[in-house]
Image (cartoon, rainbow over all chains, first blue to last red; front, side, top):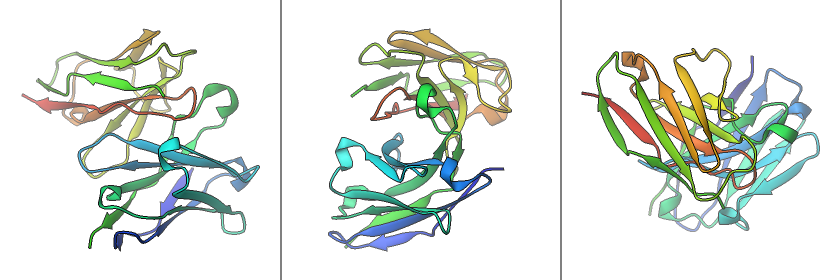
Length: 123
Length: 108
């Protein structure tokens, strides 16, 4: 069974950075395509970017380019999302989510999700 | 970027009702790249439908999706108490993989 286990809640100051981790299991790590999706209070989800573990390639939504970096550590089957220059409106729950096999033709939807990591940005 | 507009924002219904939720795209979606999710308070979204009309694993056939072009719908038959939640559509054809703002089903 696919499982995505995320790191715990964070409280950060404006201007600082945060790292959220997502440990993947249930399949060979190189088969994973992991996306990061955030959800601000009372808002819809927002896709931030993703990493294709097989190639180590990351892609990012334009809204986050320059502020977000997604990396993977194959030795620990863990994906990391770093977000810099934090602002109060970055306060949200951050989810990692799997893109199912067949993504090359089927597009990128998300069938397994982590439980989410609350990041609070406050002075 | 594809913008998805869901309507209405909130629906008040009774268990046993059948409901159709709407998701309109700002431009024609090439291919059947529209998904639906259910989200309950404090939980991650749960995939219901992908490719406009394909049910995800273990999703009962009371959930059905349809549509094409710019207009898509999710129909939920015979609402059970556990179906009252927020539903989101998502475009999954090309980056950025945008979501709608959601429709909340509440018990009347």
